[in-house]
Length: 217
Image 1 (cartoon, rainbow, N blue to C red):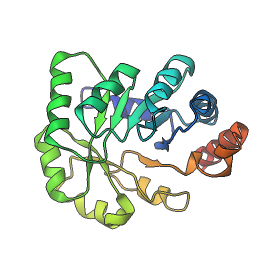
Image 2 (image 1 turned 120 degrees about the horizontal axis):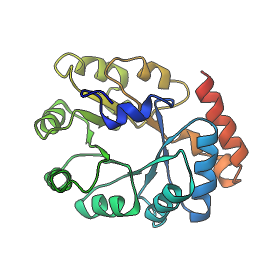
Image 3 (image 1 turned 120 degrees about the vertical axis):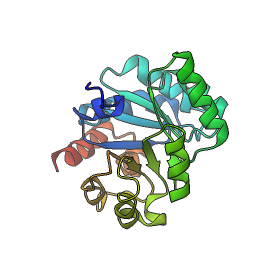
Image 4 (image 1 turned 90 degrees about the vertical axis):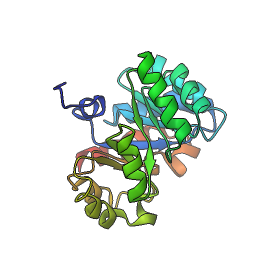
């Protein structure tokens, strides 16, 4: 990495700048799903902590799926943050940013016990300013489509030209390329890669094919 390059920049060099947002209900799905996505060319995987299987899924994927860069999503407090790190998460994503999360992230950084990436969520200009003042310059924009989508991110590029965003929420096969075309968008998150009949049918070949189709565009 160059001095100005972040860990996230480095990861995204060799993969499509899309992060599947994955909800694991059945722990047995975690490893085969991750293997299918990686085989299809998607390497950054966000496992949400919305279910009881989330942390165990992160641990299993980290241990059993070479090539996967696994992160924790829906991290809402300091306990979630620490548990995600303990499970092996390489990046952490939050829907928002609170004083508690800022303090925890700064504590972990000062201790030097984790070299991963934290993407706090923002939805307003004031929240972007708070995140920036806390030392974060790569942020999750959430819920992107509901708060202005592409138009909002274009507007933010003026006053926040040094901030990069990962829009999530309402991102789909029909609009993700428009988001990725923006100079202040580093990547985009979406759940469509692992949604629907493919997951319920445990159609891992279908998941791989869907990933390959996205990569080819």
